[in-house]
Image 1 (cartoon, rainbow, N blue to C red):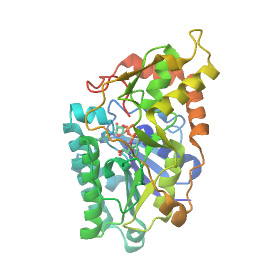
Image 2: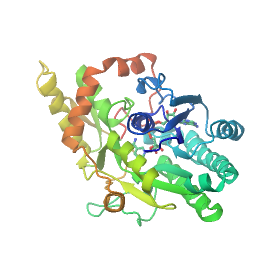
Image 3: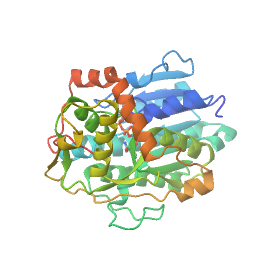
Image 4: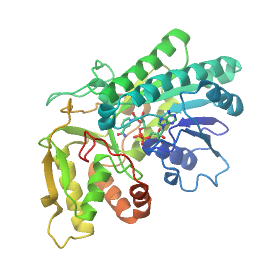
Length: 356
Ligand code: NAD
């Protein structure tokens, strides 16, 4: 698959972007150019083996800089762009929305403009095959009540600066298709979890705190529901959408794994207790409820039947198998996350640690 093609992956040193780069190098014949500014959330150690692979290149670059992007398009002549560069942490977007508007909105706009210029310069056969895949979130749809699922027809109703910035970028991508005919695709995915996840996010945060015997802070009453997808399943979905998705289409991606945040934390405690029993008893005792995040969406849940039906994708991991793999990975790869903790990173003032 993708033999002889060149892909730009923006944000390829981040959590999902690095899973996409690993997937493309492992499962396809594509040449991969990772374009990443290397913010606090990036980590090139999430790409073991990539640097030695002659199908991989890395360019440290911000997606807001048009001229530099133009040079990269001219240098590599890509057949596709997968846009995963973003500011992604909701709590940080509440503390300081500016960077979110810059990267998620202005950055996407700049990348679209340079992709369009490049696309127009291609010969007709390559122009017909070119794709711009924009990776987005289910949070653009706002919050569900206790029932119902987000479909591709759900109305946009973002509630946080993060989701509003992602919603804006989705609209820009749609408009570049409708107005300029750039061959775009959009995916809206539920919460991801898995190896190489930055320690500020819920799952790794709880694993790392649980291992250290520290307090496990849970927002509100822990009853907010998220729909969880193993990151490798997301990477596989993106590659399938790129290969077979219909141009101009949007695809919801999710694993039908709705869990309350408290259920997630309980499951992590139990897995840790099995792997590394604590002399102080069950880690569930470490849970403490903290003041809720402002504008905290109650529930997200994805109807993924379109991508399953039309493109034949389905999640391979259940939440139980995926979470067990993830907890084991954090226990066995302490060097990866201890290096992040050692270099320190500015924590959000809103979140007391949970982050979702
Ligand atoms: P992440 O924060 O782990 O990684 C983002 C990467 O983008 C980092 O490597 C960072 O250095 C890079 N980056 C940030 N600003 C940049 C800029 N201006 N120019 C170039 N690179 C820049 O994020 P993630 O969790 O991997 O999310 C990737 C994408 O997937 C985002 O668009 C996010 O909205 C979307 N998404 C995430 C989830 C999730 O659960 N994490 C779910 C659905 C969709």
